[in-house]
Length: 87
Length: 190
Image 1: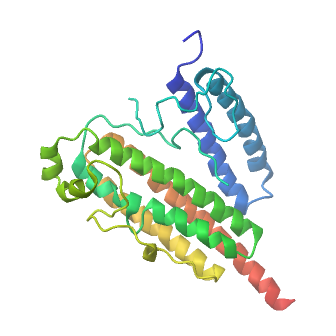
Image 2: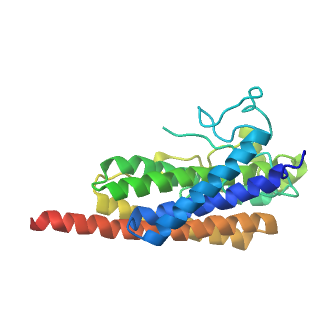
């Protein structure tokens, strides 16, 4: 896979980072003045964006409707879809 | 609007068919305390929330519940997709098979279809947030019963994740209720 991390390994990292973002997001909704949570959130946003960029360059868009480019052909339709579980 | 992200919130692993377990887990897809009911309840209650924070919490938790609906769907789909008919019959899923083959449909564990009567949208934010806290507790109980019934460690792992999220959502709704109550009290005094 030309030195790129395997798709599943990168996907697990994105899932972990985005889960952290989801949980911090909900916490900040009711604690908007918690500075440390806000700093953590902004750090996770940067790490998540970098991980998604790496994934999308290798495997195609993660998000539809204009949120990720598809320079080498229309890769949004590529399988697997998320419910097509790979063990 | 909503965007679709082509990944699950939490990984689902299934190594062998288990239609008996699928028959029970499907209640968290289309049952009274399931993820469809949860997401639609919060996403329709948000319009009449009086403070910005409550609108945000209902939007965000309602959206996370859609991701949970997809996790439950992935679990059920993979537990039944390669199940032989003999196992489907033995699991008591033959009635479901007659209507839906191995497709996903919104039913509870006994096959009753989803109904909007499972949810309420009352216009009173204190009432709605109490319903939401109760809904999270009911979903937590259901996941605990499903964990008791599960004979598949991979499925149990996913059910534990979903159970844990109900606990977090309950906490956030409790904080939101307090913020709404403080807002209503302030309005009463000035």
